[in-house]
Structure formats: structure tokens, C-alpha cells
Length: 112
Length: 112
Image (cartoon, rainbow over all chains, first blue to last red):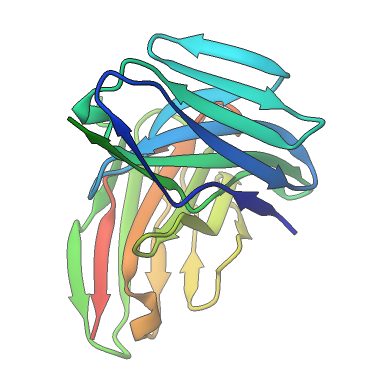
């Protein structure tokens, strides 16, 4: 089966840096996505890692270690609008097609 | 660009009623997916399709049916609505499985 773990909630201060961790145990692993979801809205794509290492995209960076089954999303210079749920999702290759399996999400609250 | 369009946005059903959630995309994506999201939880895959005429079950298919007669449309059918199907339903599409998903805005369904 598939197992994806991430913290339920995190709180951080505006202007600070926060790291959201994700660990996974899956078969057929072929990459890891991070999505942002504001309350009442659809998820939006943030990043995709398929190789080990760090991918930087503006204030957001994502890291993957395939051997450790571990990823993190790093948010710098936090803004109030970054308050949202952050979903870790594992991309899995199966005989019937490719699909994403999502973790339960980390609710990030940014405070003044 | 319309992207992924879901209708309706909100619906209240009585137990035992049936309905179809509509999903249409105009990006010529081969891959389409239906997810449900319960409060405070991640997204669970209901059904997916890798092309017209091809569908397959996800993690939680019971109580649902789908069809994919065209590339653009991927409707989700609830035959006998139950309170356990109260959820937010998201349709998504992608060009290929590892290109990141584009999500529709969601359908909030309540079964009473």
C-alpha cells in the first residue's frame, strides 16, 4: 500500500522561514508533487521533484531524497497569503496508469 | 482558457437520489481524475482515465461510476446517494501523469 505522512498543523511568523516535511512509503514511486490549497479552493501546483536534490522556485523550494523516502517544502519570507494547506502527493506508476496519491495536508498558519 | 470546468458548484441530495457531476476540460489532456476531499483530509482518488474509452478504479470507487466517451468530458455518477458521500469533489486533468494536475473549482455535495 501507500503511506504518506506530513504534520497536521504548523504556525510561523510573517517574514520567517518554514519547512514542511513529508515522508512516504510507496511502491512504483516516480516523483513527488507539492500543492497549495487555500480554504474552499482547489489545489494549485507548486513543485515537482523526480530526482534527488533541491528545486528552487522563487520563495518556495522543494527537496527530495528517494533513498530516504523524504521530501520537504521550504517557504521563505513568509507572507500572510501563504496561510493555506500544503499537500504532499506521490506520483505512482501502475499497470493501469499513472496517478497521484495525496497526504492529508499540513495546515500552515502565518501570524504577525 | 477555461481549463477544467465542474458543474454544479453546490448540490444538496436526499438519501437514495442520484446525480451526475460534470467535468469538462479544454486543454486536450489525456488523463482525467476524480477525487473527493473530506474536511481536514487529503484527496482520495475515486476513478481515473488515461484516455477516451478507458477508465479505472482508484482508492474509493464504491458508490460511483464514470464514463469517458470523449477526451473533453469525464462525468461522475452517484446512483444511490448516501450520507457518507457528503464531500467536496474535485475533477483534475493532466497532459501526462507527471505534468502536474489542473484542478477544477470543485463541487460541494451534501447528502441528507
